[in-house]
Structures are given as C-alpha cells and as structure tokens.
Length: 116
Image 1: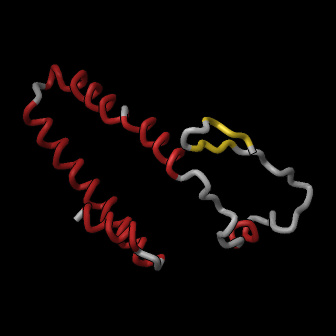
Image 2: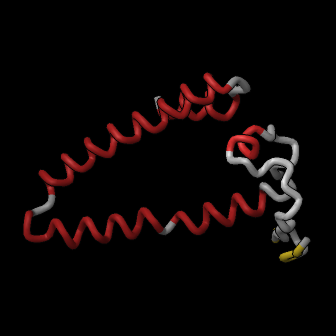
C-alpha cells in the first residue's frame, strides 16, 4: 500500500489524488512503525532496549542528509515562480515592494555552487 501511495503521489496531477497517495504513505508507514516497535520490544531484552533503540534511530537518521543533497542536486532549476500566488495573498504580502529580493544558492551538476 505504501508503493501504491507513492505512485499516486508521484503521478497524481489533481490535489485530491495527491492527498490520497500521501495519506496511504503516511498511514501505512505509521502502522508499520507500530508493528516493528511491538516486535522489537518482544525480541530485545528490557535492559538493552534503550541502547538498541538509540542505535536504530541514529541509523535511520543517517539517510536524511543524503536525501537533502539528492533533492538539491536533482531539483536544481525547479522553483516556485510558476506557482499560484494565493499563499502570498493570504498572508498580506502580495503587492508589497518593500520586501527585498532574496538571493538563493543553486547546486548544479558539475558546476559546484552558484549564487544567483
């Protein structure tokens, strides 16, 4: 079901299809985590449970910097310029000219870091 949610999220052009895919991913991920935690509690002795859980959490978090780097490399050039402006209108910042333009860093393949 997580894979079905990933397909819906990745290919869904309509917001409701995207939301359904996201809910499948998040819901079944949480259920799987509860199952694994219950199983882990039965297998690991209580005196070793804290140390073992800490190591598992650290190992699970090792992938986050690599995931961020991967997104930064392969999403270069994708930005929010073509997106709807309603979030700006909702918070009152639309049409304000006193907001300075932000400079942002773009990581390009083979070119290093470029500031634009």
